[in-house]
Image (cartoon, rainbow, N blue to C red; front, side, top):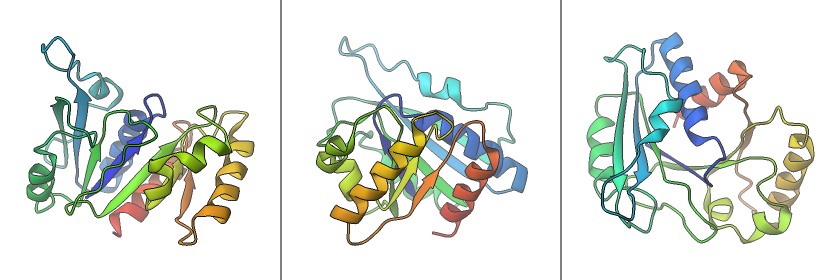
Length: 193
């Protein structure tokens, strides 16, 4: 069970959609729990994350379930853990997409095997990275949108901050919606967890 953490706009849903296409091509089964913030007016969540994920994949191998988040502080619905534990018995990989999280939020729970922070160029400099809880606690970092012109510099900043502040040296992957091979390579690593 992997939780996908990142700021709104980092490309979490798009990356998950690309991983679902890669999984479908290899015959692997993946379940996604897509958490979406509920509106303050109590009318529920928009569930827009699903719009960025393919809906025409084999329903026996790919499952996407949306959950509204009503004020939970860890970025996921309170039932995500129980649901993930049950789905893990049936699927090769379970991905939990959090709502867009801020600097002080992390998702740590006994049912999470790996926390994956999705970062994107233009979403802060090295000082922002140093004080970001998701950066400091992630088991794996993904620099998404790596095809952008600023991605090379951003990747260098991420590696510098990792060298200075993370002795555990978590793996860093670069992905882009335009690079199916990089996404497939990330999926392969996650399937080995």
